[in-house]
Structures are given as C-alpha cells and as structure tokens.
Length: 616
Image (cartoon, rainbow, N blue to C red; front, top):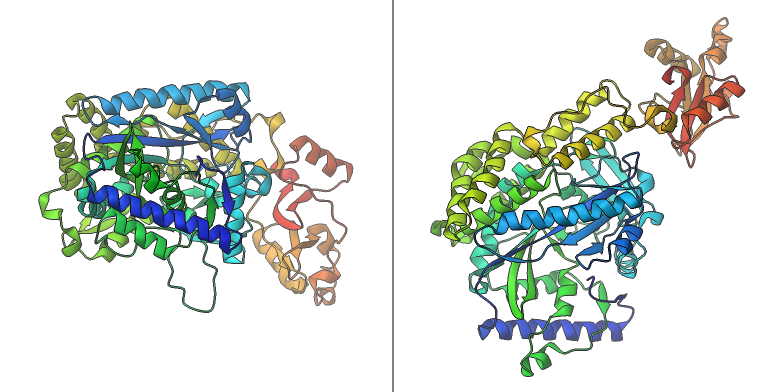
C-alpha cells in the first residue's frame, strides 16, 4: 500500500476501473503460474521490523515523522501512529549464515534508528504492545498524517456505519468504543517472510496454518493493554477487532473479520486463494494505475500486480500469501504476521528461524494435512495459544498434548531437520534454537511481563508500575540477552524523577463511587466499612457531578433522620478537579490553597481516579 497513492472508491466509475485492474492482475498471475514463470528456487527469507518510540517518561513519543525525515533511508517507513516506525530488511537466500547475517543487519538498522531517535528525545523499544499506551495516545492527533491511513480509516468507518468496538476478556476485561482504527497502532510485530515453491502452495500454506498455534505459544509477549492483563498475545484479539468492518447487529453475521485466521483449508492454487479473497472481502480503497499487467507480460516484463497487492494489503491473514518480484523474478511467499516484536533481537531471529525450520521440516505425512485434520482443531489451537500462551494444550495427531511436549518432542526436531536440509550454518542453528528451547523450559516474554508487572504493583500505582516495566524492557533489550535470562524489574527503581511525576503516576484508579440517587445511609456505611474519606458521585451518564467527604457526613451522624435522603441532597456540587497530566507540585498547590484533601481526576467529565494528600 505504501507504494501507491491510494484513494477512496467513491463511485461506480472508480470501482469499475479498480476492479478491472484487479481482475487483470489475477489473470496475469494465473498465466504466470500455468506457464512456470514464478520462481521456484532459490528460497529467500525476509523480515519487517515494527518498533515503538518512547519519550523520556517511557511513554509513546510522537516524533516518528521527524525521525523518519532525519533517517533519510528507504529501508524505513511510517506506520499508522506517530509512535511507531518500520524497517524492511533486505531479502536473503536461505543458506549458511543467513540468519546471523540478518541479525547483524537488524541490529545495524535499529542502532541507526536509536541514534536518530535520541536526537529527537526518543528511544526505540521492541514489544508487541507498548505497556504505557493510554487512551489519550489513541486520539486523532496521534495518527500519522499520511493519506493512506486517513483514507483507510474513513473507508472502514463508512462500511461499519458505527464506532469500533473492543471487547477483550482475560484475567481482566476491556470494553471500549472508539471512533477510529488507531487501536490497530498499538500492535507491533516482527513479520517473517518465506518464499515457497508455487506448485507446493496448498501443502505449504496449510502446513503454515497447522503449526501457527504451537509456534505462537512460545513467542507471546503482549499480555498488557491499558494496564489490564488480557490475553498472553493480546495483539491477536486487538488487531482483529480494531479494523473490523462488521458492525454488531441483532442478526447473525457470517462474514469474517478482515483480520482473520481463516475458516477452512486451502484447497487449490495461490490463484484460487486470491480469488476467494476477492469474493470474501470487498475492495475498500483503490489507486490509479498507469500499467496493464498483461501488457507488461506481452512486452517481456514482469508485472508488479499492484491492484492485487493493494487488495491483499487490506485483508490481514495471520498467514498471508504474498506475490512479489525479487531481482527481476516473480515469486510467492508466505508472510507470518502473528509473531510480535521483541522482546530482543535475539528472540526475534530465533522465532523466525524456528518458524522457517518447522515450515521446511514438514514430514511427508503432512503433505495432505487438509484430508487428515479438522481445520477447527487447528484454528482452536491458534486462539488457545493467543489466550494462554505456554499454558496451552493442543490437539495434534488426534491427541491432546501439552505445549511443552509438542514443541520439545515434535517441533524442535522438525526445525533442526528443515534447517539442516537447507545447509543453514550448524552454529547458527544451535545458537538460535537453543534460545527457543530455553524459552520453552523457562518462560516466554508474556510471562516475564506479567510477573514483572505484578511485582511492581505491590508497591506502585498502575501508571508508575507500567513506566518502570517499560524502562526495564528497554534496559534488558539493549544488553541483547534473550528474554528467558532477563531479571524482573526492581521495586526500588525511580524511572520518573519526583519533580517530573504527574497526577496519573500516583492517583488511585480503583475508586469506590456512588450514584446521585443512592441512599446516603448506604454510602455512609460503605465509607465506614472501607475506611475511606472521599466518595465521587456519578450521574446516570457516569459523569462526575459531586463529591461526598467524611467531613460532610459527620454533621449528619448526630441525627439519623438526616441519613434518609439521597446522596445528591448532601454532596458537594462545586468541585475542584484535576487531570492525569497535571504535575504533582501543581496538584498539591491547588489542594493546599483550597484547603482540601482530595482531588477527583477527570477527563471530559469522566472520572479516572482520585488523588488525596495521603498519596503524596
């Protein structure tokens, strides 16, 4: 999509021109497939690294455009939000030391990005979901000002005719409505590409689906979103819902989300796969084209199939077939989109090698897996892995088997076999697959994140704990060690200096509230039971409208008849409030000046928490 000036398909003429180009591209691909014009060897690998940018407080930085401009390197490109960027690595032939060579290139580009980011007061961080993202970072001002993102957002909103809905339930639960696709920008991944023999497409693609769940389980590292523990790989659910064109209705909606795993095995060629994609998903954006793909073929040129690429770029399969041209040769590859960014570059290259090795180590007995295994077991494995990570059990060969047993006894031997068959350096294989083995035995990035956050929450409020956790991620990453050897963050770290701290760092977020029509006697008992001195009062729209304090209620304790009233009759209605980004010094000054001991923390009349003198 980044190669084209995309536009909305406004009318039937626009749609007609685009659809004609799309159909021509499919016909051209079918011609190339039938006439053996698609490259079969050598096999190449490639990768795309998405990464986060954080500021000195370890929160999302909005400097992506400035950093990209300073970099002046075509390997780097923008992402949906102003706190993400992407670097595209050069494809390599799958042989010898290709993985360690890719690792060197990856570190080179990330070091280049880090050096440039420092100039703009930012740091580069690798993680599937940045822990310090807050709702304010998901507002329109954080969308990268590039036409294709705005157009894609508008197109999805127009199809839905409603706000985006998010509902993710794990240990905690998240329910949100949002007016844009910006929640998709929370996700960063390490997308791996493996070229395949186009004649082997059905077997190779179905195998990539079959192994997805077990591979994902050992790679999970994104369990937190907005301070809530959700899935071990929350990206899977978040990405699915954040660009979903299906609005909720009273009727059963059978269409798939644009982000999907699929509902059945691939049964034909890669051309058949693309035909099914066009049938299943409407084209939502278009572009102007100055070349005809069949005309290119007639002139002895290899077409780029840009219309097909554009359509494929708005259907987000977790295993996505891609057409491309490398060194003048057209090819088909599978893009693995479910592996998250981080926790370290060593972990990422190990994840990629593990996936590539298992892909190439496919036993012949699985060449026709679509005739032997129920697809729903495979799909169930994938979502179990996303929810439970390495605590998952998988259906494999008709048996229910633990994650650790399947990976250690079946997948690792397959990976070794597949890599050695391609004459990949034995030293590299031992180095990177030992990282996978140690992670299987000792825990993945998701468990490090959860254990670290729970440890920090014993002594810190949520926002500060997330800041410290993010800083600890960064410090471990720059050391280069894989996540299974990381120490948990220390409780005594002072990541944000006291003079730089804001209300949001220390406010109480789990706040007991009352409703305007509640019984005053009931609320009094609640305050006595919980030993609290301040209760914010909300109306039916859940907006903050008042505050009850123990001082106010003490006057009523002498006369029980006074308690037979509503909260709204007694609460304070003239409120002094603050916001989460107010400095602690300013908040403390407001409380001292007004001789009050509590400040409700609000945003657009919605209560976020409270801060009291005790919190200082």
